[in-house]
Image 1 (cartoon, rainbow, N blue to C red):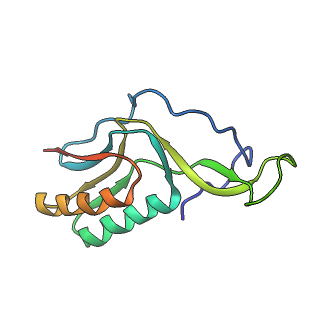
Image 2: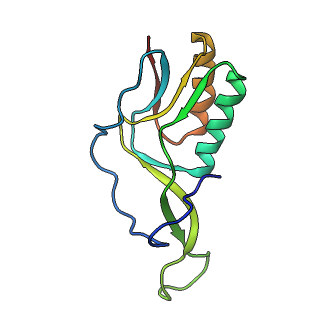
Length: 135
């Protein structure tokens, strides 16, 4: 599981996911990329699951790059606990995704293999995604 080694504060405010991604929205030549079409949160478990799928399918054929890292802590209180008594404990780490963000890049796969990877990833993520080819 991915999580940061050290953070300044253990817990943070929820915040909102707004706008369209403008910084990480293109990739280099020769890469296939998975791009998000909707906003949401990706947990560290989901990111790790997708990383394993891509690395198993590629099987030493090329290069895989993660363009995201879960650095945002999400807290939750246990079930059937009364209101008050402070903020809940840390439950998981996540990454906030805005539409247009490149999530993963991989190189060295054929087009049919890239489409197979996309079909498997699509069912694992809670976002709408598409595959992009830069050749």
